[in-house]
Length: 161
Image 1 (tube, helix red, strand yellow):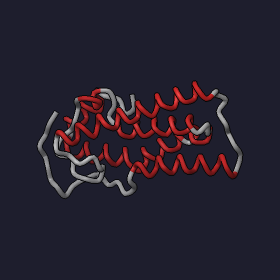
Image 2 (cartoon, one colour):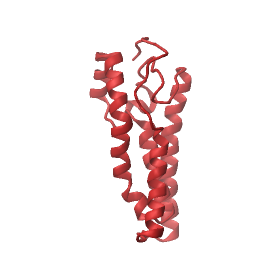
Image 3 (cartoon, one colour):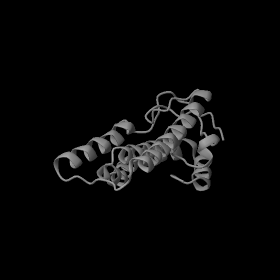
């Protein structure tokens, strides 16, 4: 789906780089674990490592797929930059937010790997923060810029999975 409405001065009104929100979730989980109350996971090392690596690899694969599509179409993945066209191929056929989903999977993998239940418990609040600070602004921007093209895409592909 393309609509070449490329104004280089436009972009979603996103003020906080999304990776910083996920980083805050990991750091917050580490601090809660260290200074409030530990919340260890009851997994042996081998299964914990396997689960952790699986989530980390899935997260990286999703993000790499999304960034690759941005590069191929000449777009900047920063949400506050102009979007010249809607990408609806590759990982964007399955999720409208593969980079944010990938970062969430990465946070889960880190939490499991560090045996820190707080990092896992903070995934839903981080996703809510991502919605409030980023996704709702991106969606409003894309609806305004692309109209029915974006609405059709939005109705055919889920936000997460």
